[in-house]
Picture 1 (cartoon, helix red, strand yellow):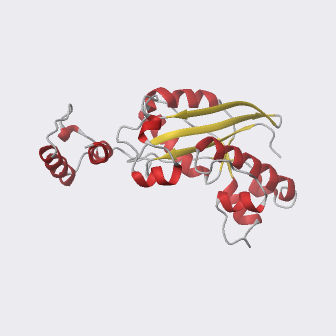
Picture 2 (cartoon, rainbow, N blue to C red; picture 1 turned 90 degrees about the vertical axis):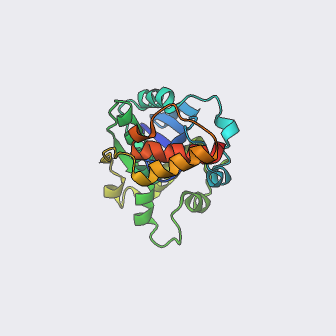
Picture 3 (cartoon, rainbow, N blue to C red; picture 1 turned 120 degrees about the vertical axis):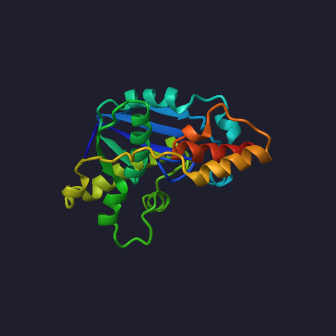
Length: 232
């Protein structure tokens, strides 16, 4: 069983690393089986938090108001991770967001990782669900606040330890750290449809933008549209 690692989880405004934003990062640093440090921070998104995300996570726009933006918080998290092996449940999802935002800020983010979801698909192929909540219930792991980043990261660490205890000897391959990889998509320019929609929104809601919408990237335009719809 791995004794030193970082278990982490993020909450986001959606499923796309290119178009959506990170709103919370939670992580714990384990050394020789003991938690030695924690990372718990909100990130204030540019476009606001959609109601469906608030319903899922309980995170509101008021909760993140005044928190650092991604450019402030993410470098702190990258430093927290050092060169550790990362553990997450469906870790590729979380890694893809951090990798994308890190590259936008000019940082690299390359790590080995262990995915507890992939482990569960092998050792618990018989279970109807391998979602984190279902596996926590199976192993009697208490998660005080599901869908909040730190609590999910802590539950994931406990899940990893539980599955390793019972199955690593018989399924060693699935427990070995693997390189995490995500190819960050090239930034695409704003589309004509987005320009037309933004122009109409600005006119209807009597707002002006500091930046010329024709210079936006596709993802920036998406975030701006989300922001206008949520705040105006």
